[in-house]
Image: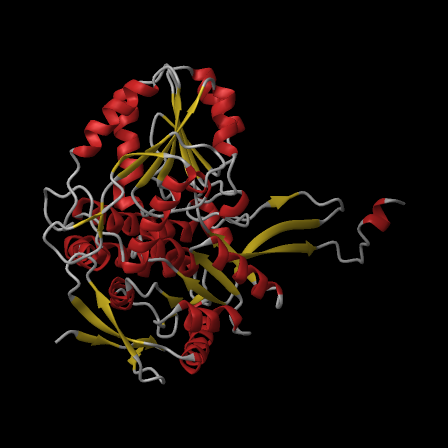
Length: 493
């Protein structure tokens, strides 16, 4: 019988008030991994109340002391890396080398955020008046609501949780319902590392009820969300009603440009990894391949041969290259977009079908469309599956125009041997991230991560921007003149 997992509120595992549960399913085998309790609005209220109490304690602890908890958490994660990676492959489906990378990313961001405990820097500057000192300091926001997706079930929660903790905030955390077990394990690590009761609270359940209750809660001061554009728009609208801070990481329709002077083998490996790694279920996945017409035929020939050699199956097996997609709804969505691509006139070069690798789970072939036009839906809309659309261009200017012809702007890449091409792409591609001679995936935790246009609302995660995401900036003026100074009024005299 699958183990039942409770909510975690105020430092204790508690039963939900709804009495409802859902099953956590392995997408490769359809085995029930765990039974998870569904929170209700009363549980969110309890979590907020606990977070408010936890905040009063946690925010008073000096940041370097808070960092000690995070450093311990990083060590525990390192010790349990293989255990967590195996569990992630079972719960989310991606292959074991990728889940090891997911856990490592959580370790890296935890260590990085802990290091920020000794360098959450403000500014000092001169005053326009005599005997007056000016500076800025960072202050915690208070209780923050974190809502995370299923495709990076430890890394993305860690990207949000660790910066929120080091800056002194308390958390109400809702993970995706497809991967709640990894969220439980991450919270357990933090508690073992010595996090104060109430500082992190875990509430599980559907976004339409639990997520909504978090977003609309009047005593949650900020929301950080990673997910779809439509949900992000709703969250932004709701948060505007109370002027609540909101940080959004939304979709992507990421292009790779391959110029006629590129190293084709290097580009080929990058495109395969970018398009079909994690079964295409990354916001940074390569979903559009923009080929210079001079190398189009040769590149497609090589790409087709490599794609046909990829093995789809259970991610726990070493011979597997691509695991299952996350659930039945996602499988059906991918199938729907394959039909749309055909109807729009694109040529299905390879794939386009479900696969039965001897398991009952949700498997789909790596899929390639050619003759894709920039306005087609498969070139505009996020599919979130192993589907790659190929577009052809005659020069760099046209390639950049095609790359920018989408509502998203997360990641981008160009393969070229010409430094001028590289810098023109860096300057002109509308994206928060541009890679040169590397695929669209592979963020590093000490650099800001995020996008422009429909991908986000201006905030960035990771790097020093992560601290700013979860902090308020306070300007401080210290007048030691011993008399009333009237700033611009005095200086104008």
